[in-house]
Amino acid sequence: MGKLIWLAQALTGGLLLVVLGLHMVANHTTEGLLTYEGALQRFHNPAILVLESVFLLVVVFHACNGLRNVIMDYVKSERAGRLATRILTAVGAVAAVYGLWLGFALQAR
Image (cartoon, rainbow, N blue to C red; front, top):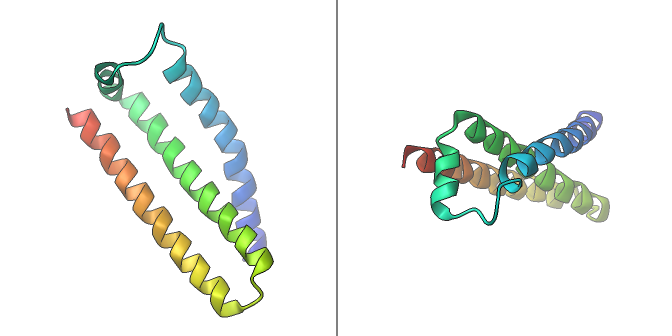
């Protein structure tokens, strides 16, 4: 299982570079600052919603798994490691669900 988690961390790291680049191009190459209305308008484009959703999911997994790996390096108790894994899984799930809900809510406006 450890090798699979390491592979997932490496793959999401590479995917993060690609998705971050696309996010930067899609959101930060406009003229001037993006207003709230402009951001809402962007979410009406399904491609932007998909891009931002993938970006969210990749960042949440990569961050939670990375933090879990750091904790596992320092925690020697198997029980504490399982607890850290459960807590980070719950935090990641809540963040992902809330972020996806928010993205779809913005698209519906």
